[in-house]
Image (cartoon, rainbow, N blue to C red; front, side, top):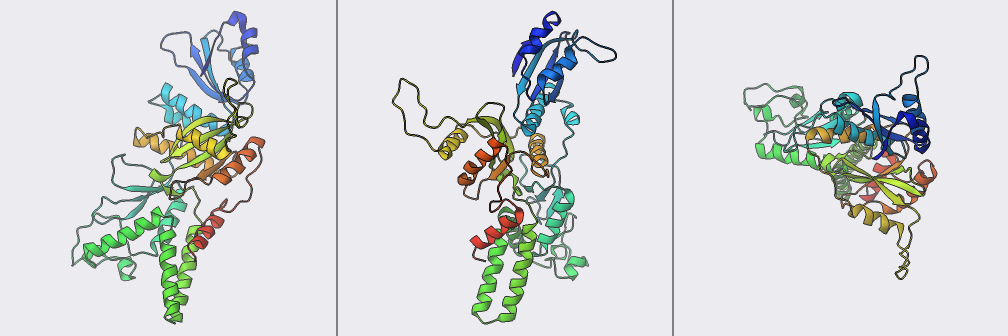
Length: 399
């Protein structure tokens, strides 16, 4: 944060020194115990002139109550929101959440620690020490519920919310009657069989549906080889249904502790863009990336070979330590900020996610650097949309 002392008698020099750029700022009071005024603005100089100039008519003026101004220049709306979140969290630890109006991100909760695991929709992470797994974030709770219901149609996992105490005399429910559940409530299966089905569901969620597509595709091919054409046709129809379910979810949906990636945003610095690292659903940044630094070396050294942009981005990311959540609340807040930006209809910047091997699509990242710097819209690359992304995954699997 940059700090300027404020003296009402020299306000003209003060205003002239302020940048006329987007910023997050805090007005420090000149009385002990008073709270600072914290906000963001698209033009810092104009906003502070309005707040600190001499009062005219009924306009509010804080010039006699402010001793200093601290500000952080930002390059765009996302950076402004994230910097404001961190500043409010530091200044008002007991009430910052009300000021930000953050809506928790809808998630799928796989209750692994339950004796009979199930899937539930939630917007609350119970604890960092929980043995459960969370998947998301989804745009709305309704979308999360629809994805959970459509996905569970391919499995025999229970959908009831009761704490089960299996009893052979229990009549069961409609799902057990329709053969859509293994019915552990009345010992309709062994505990080992239910554990196997739970593992299938967890693999499905962790792979973004990829494990199920491979499983059904293999069953279809085997039926074709055995000349069982009716079984192959049924498997093919099941495969198309599974692909349709996957095509409706966004690329951001991951197991949240494995939600790793990179966001590119405009920077307030000339010839720079801002990088935001995403590690386990936690945001870190902004990290200034200089677009002019190709192959530069100090004058007192031999010029070194030009370094590729891919290498420079990787080097910058590896030099920063991933941020770990200090609490479940902080984790939910970072996911809420990320979800709010990602699901906007019109958003500035681009985002890329690591694959199952922890690798970023660096060629796409490098192409996006130029677009973000120039303020251009994302190109229609493969996997820019959810449907194209899952079609690509299916073709990878040879389905």
